[in-house]
Image 1 (spheres, helix red, strand yellow):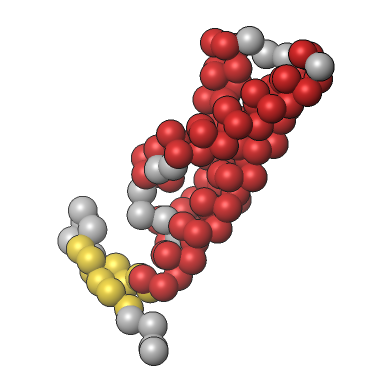
Image 2 (cartoon, one colour):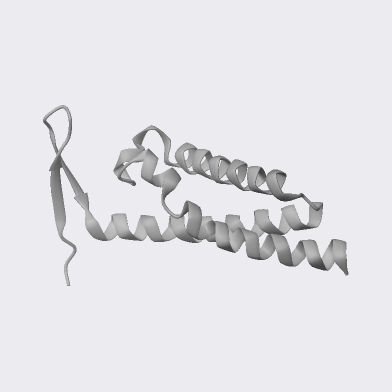
Length: 114
């Protein structure tokens, strides 16, 4: 099945073309990065023994750092790869928090309780 190129009108009135398949692939890669980041930062928070609010603040900090790294890697032409910066930050925030809490509580219990 050939890749369809879609177009949209931006604020300046120019027509922009983008590949739907490439956008879906980029979002899949970002989702993989978020899942890995949630597991790694949850493990780090558990090993460090971060308590409740400090642990959630660490998660929020990890999400923002990953967002900034993705934007830095994409460069000034980030619109070529992603729809919007806000969606890049907020999509998957709560779903990845479950992965974070899973690793956080597991490693906290293994290191500090047992």
